[in-house]
Length: 238
Image 1: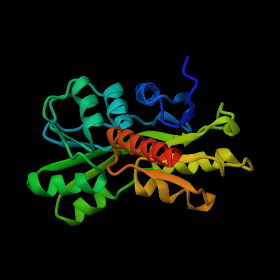
Image 2 (image 1 turned 30 degrees about the horizontal axis):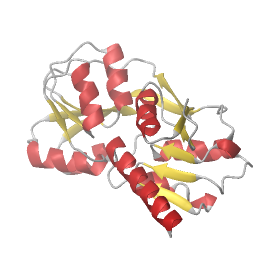
Image 3 (image 1 turned 135 degrees about the vertical axis):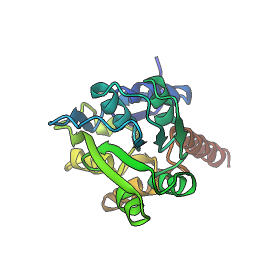
């Protein structure tokens, strides 16, 4: 059993189980306790036209779409590699990855998609990034369709005093994390954020140790953590 430093994985299931393995490989003891609960929305969105290009900015969006719609003929643009991998695994064939964040999605569409193409952003209720607004201003016909909602959990099954690291995967998740802390002391924590936008939510906590991935993906998070551990080892050897 791993007895290394403990890391609280705030990510939603089932993805958190995969990332837990990454942290365990680094010698950390993962604690999975999502801060957001994912639920479907009602009424169920109407199926897209087969000619629509679908945009997914999260794995939750892909999963929610696949749960209610059997259509897989549409071309797809995804925010990153993990989302694109999931899109292919549920049956989509024509999939591109922006390999970044919402702004990279916008750039990829502007670069590769004609203005005549109708777009559908399949997203959550509290979507970040303003993709639909930006692409609409650029001349595209785009519809933002809500497929799921992510809302804060009431309670986290975590003893914060025994946690060393916290992995955060979205600004909304970071906000939910702060709410769960309430009056508990978090000064000893090192936070690990997937993006600068996620990290910015943590400003009110005044934490001394906040790590940010260079790019918004799990590979970059692990790279950042490896570099962090190398720095700690070097300082210990002085």
